[in-house]
Length: 133
Image 1 (spheres, rainbow, N blue to C red):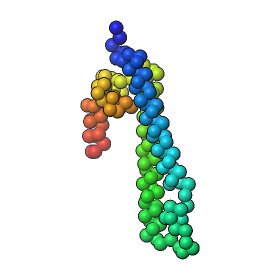
Image 2: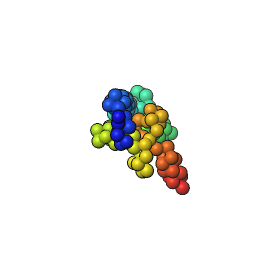
Image 3: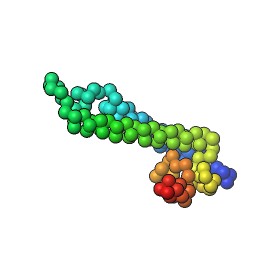
Image 4: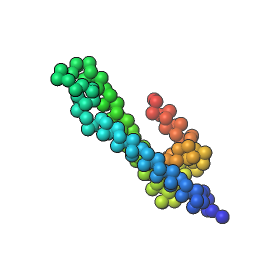
């Protein structure tokens, strides 16, 4: 029988760990693709202009917006990678699935959907409500 603190079998923890590793690899790959598309191209490459004519200011503004948008996506993905790494660390430390705010168990249904969840649904809703204020 598992102790009160140990809510998961080794098999369940291994499954969460594998899911987190897979998700991390997928996100890292997306970040790499976005970064290469955004940072490794010149203004002419981005616009597709191969002629000798100068680039119109509206095109430059549009391209800059797209570049900034992509960099924002990479930043968000990086934050998600950190959350995944923290969840993997919680698995190693044997406190995975426990809310960081109220110390109550996070529902397995929630962890199945969001395996890197740091808090229970109730605490997450409270945090989101505070952020809106």
